[in-house]
Image 1: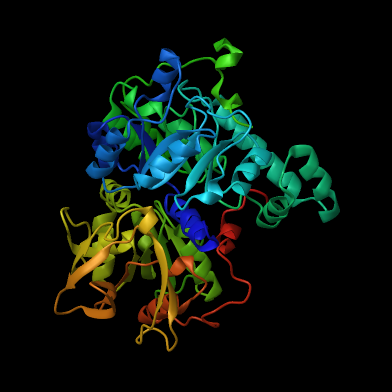
Image 2 (image 1 turned 120 degrees about the vertical axis):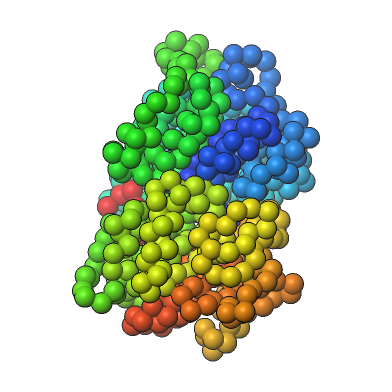
Length: 293
Length: 222
């Protein structure tokens, strides 16, 4: 990927700012999401809550299903490849979708290497728990970052932790004399050049969305107030009682995240949210955020 | 909401702040020394000389405009002389005809087609001379851009490329299917400001601008 292509890919993510990206598993759901005002859909066979329940190996979705969804909507279509599975990424690029999520929700294909995303023309979004992880993915060619909140739990606590961690590290870096950056970068696993860039910008050098455990309009507004540029909602919509209504409500709350009156109006009469999971009750080997490094 | 100046004459340029490339436009207005305001609800339209509808997703923007009664507010303020400029998705919102879909604001007589080039792998950079706007060619950024297929009699074509129209205007509305807010060049923002009767300052190309310049309006660390 040349630098001009990378620039276009970062800029597509900029056009998604303030928007909601929704997980969908079929054409009907994709249309509901688009109609509700989603800025993109993530096409996948099973939402994370079901992947978690079913267990086994989760792979890239059936390309025929992704192609059908792509045909059905005019908003951007994203799909997930396993961490390190560069051939799944090659297939998704050949499908000519708009964005690839190299995702911990699927079973990792490589426990040492993430995909070398600089080899691709298609843009990638990757999850991160802290500044170091975000900058390592950007160094590998990611054009967009998202938090790595515990997917499929309906519990926003991990996404909040990741965003607060990134913000804290960004503030530390921004206030640091330049000679301290080398040590900070070494300790926290930050690529040095990107650390300098973050210090200058006072934020990540690409768009950063919230992802993992967002289930209500208030969750979405919370992540936006913490400084996220937009929101991914996975299981939260289509595992709830009234998906179309909840989808519209989360779009509203994300656009007006600073206006409690509007977030309140969006929160009224939504029916039941998805069932939630306490993180402490998940066996440690089943925690998704630990996948990748 | 940031109001830099309020006077009897409309002097402020608004940027519709619901979703999409908002900071990028604000940063360009700032470099031209123009007072600006983020526009989120009906009361924010007061005293605007012009309103920019940014790039983003037009289905999302259209839904939010309808939901919060902003379609009516935009129509009313356009009626009193507020100028409008739509970039990419913003151009789709302003068109009277959108291929295969309902139109949203219908303030410029033209037919536009969403994703006219295809998906993200078909996004591209280009360059062109727009005589009405600038004496030198300007950089153009097309991201999942629409194509304007045809325009009505009262619409002037500003830039025609291959089989489509990339920029056009009528008395009150400018549309561009590309994103001037994603390049360093201020020519189109200046052109729109002049159309609004304002007085932009400075040069069209700023030293030291880069694609991250908008981020100073979206910092985490102060």
